[in-house]
Length: 402
Image 1 (cartoon, one colour):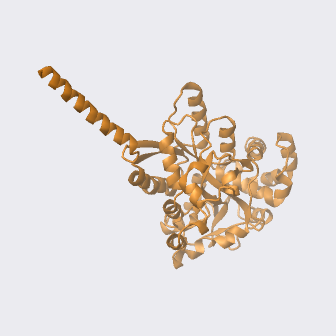
Image 2 (image 1 turned 180 degrees about the vertical axis):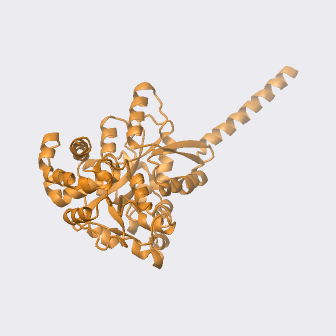
Image 3 (image 1 turned 60 degrees about the horizontal axis):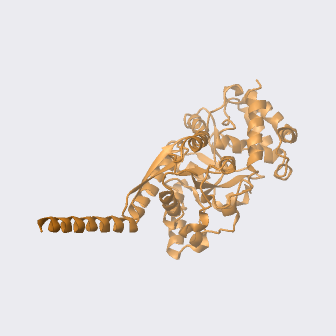
């Protein structure tokens, strides 16, 4: 009799435990998850937004712990490739990506998807048939990445030293020749350096003559020869006489901050405002674009094909697409990244909040361009495989052929 009673106690206790576990599995918000987000970590404003804004949001709303892992995109792609070939489950969940890197990752089956059309916020607030959701550097995304934000290449300069900012290749050359050692640009494997090279190509060769080029090394090299000659002509007058190029935009910004050069550049249109406000850059810093325009694109979040936590990754990306996070990301006091969300689809209150964070204080208004001015000077990106070839040609002809 005692044994029977003991058996019943054990059975009831086991049933109660099972019910608790089952309930916990049914309520996905309760169960704690960790999601890794891999991406470039060279901008502290971006890092702060991911850690303090997005990380806090997903913790409070999904009970997801977001672990940001700073890593250059070429290293991320190598890691994706190695882990895909050596194990069933990798260590990367979410990837900050776009352009030729997305093209490579998708082509080599390194990404999970399609997933974009399954996200609640994407369906509610985004144009899923529009170019930002369907194409990335000229190639179809097929739902394998979600539009996080938009970016436009700009020049930032010290208006005290540069009285008339160059707005085309010829006027830049004149400035560089007349002010030797006061200008340089990053290598082509840096995002901003690559964008600068394309800006010069757009001005000298023309976007329309580039966009449909056969993606072969020889054909592209022949077409961009006038621009290559231009880059060579600049070299003797660059910082360090062109014998050394900054490794990335972070190093270029440091040179500008230290007063070694007069002009820096960025793929974040509103970067100058935050840098002036925190006194990293001189108060006389202003922003400019070229007459024929500068490259404009969208950057995205994707999921690794062998991600350890696809469910959590989807929650993080859905959160990043929310009005709250898009407004937070656009805040000129923070990352100042232009939103990808459709303005017409958000509420009146959210529109007011977005307008507020995009309006700089009067004393800093001159440091950045208004969005209306930026939009007048937007040039589309070239196809990813063309960008890769152009960057390689610049390395071969300019960087290594000394």
